[in-house]
Image (cartoon, rainbow, N blue to C red):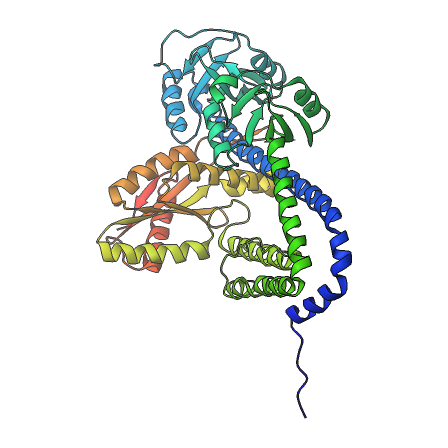
Length: 514
């Protein structure tokens, strides 16, 4: 008895083509229209996702500068009116940011310092609207584009109130040049003829991928500005400031009130339609002349698309990151997208497994793994490494008096200060509770001691949490490779013991392991 042969995709398609060749010819015109509208809708969706991604990146940059300014506003040098020392601190903070400059303005709208000029230089005054808003409301502001009186060129930035006893004493600002936003636009790698532009809250162009020098500081077209004022995101057909008819897709940030727009020349869309029409006409001719050969080719393509899912599926099973390219088959693309989403979920789960959920720092498991790897590198290369073990002094009373929500906020600020204080080659970790550690690569005892001294000052600065200003300090123990030990567990124990010696010696100090 002969076994029944299992049909293939290609054999089934051949039967389908034979039965449907005449109706398929009549469907060509409908398919042209359908494909065009599908491509256009998909293009709008993809462009909208890109605009959201750019605005998210801009918001992250601004949020980072704003957080740095909030931290800088707590400086004790402002309390003691030692603006010279505060100027040096502002210069140090500026090195860790992507900002252009930092400035401090008093209630008389006079610049007291500006990192673009040496401290003590005479600086201009001026009551800009955003400056008046910060003084009157006591809230931070993200400015629209303006010409800096000291820089003499267009700038944008964040303005943060410096409050003491409920009164705004100064406004602390950080500026960014439009070129920084242009970098974020160029990172999206838009097609050559597409135009990306960022508008501020007034509809003024602050960054652009094409002819930026010519149009930065000018208004967008009235039709586009009016449409952006009506809705936070959407699309319309309009004309660019270059006079090019285009499909404009935009999305506005709820944080900065700035808007990102992508302008796609309509000629590109009609060219794509013409290309689609040519392919469909060729496909129809091929269908009418050699339907069986075409069915065989289509079946081969479908089978190939399905086979291409096998590799990503195996990679996902091995725990690797998976990104499945377009397979040009809806069902295969859906499976590919599902594999990509599953990969993202797996990567996210791995991230959560290696990072502290409260502070975002590395957790103990990740720290121990990286620490052992770095020790092995140090052993091979005969280089040094230092472990800084940190315990917060007075943190328990914060939880007891103000509650765990306030304590959690303090821990987040500690994590931010740690992250801003270390190099990219170093690693900060939360070991648990109020205990943290920093691994300093290529650093010996002396360098670690100097870092610990600065870190105590940084962690002992006041902590603004809502209406509260809290004060804690830190005790630090230091263990260096190879002086204090060569194994990870031994170094951790030595650093921990040194930390307890620092705490027993009066807190707010550091001790080197013997």
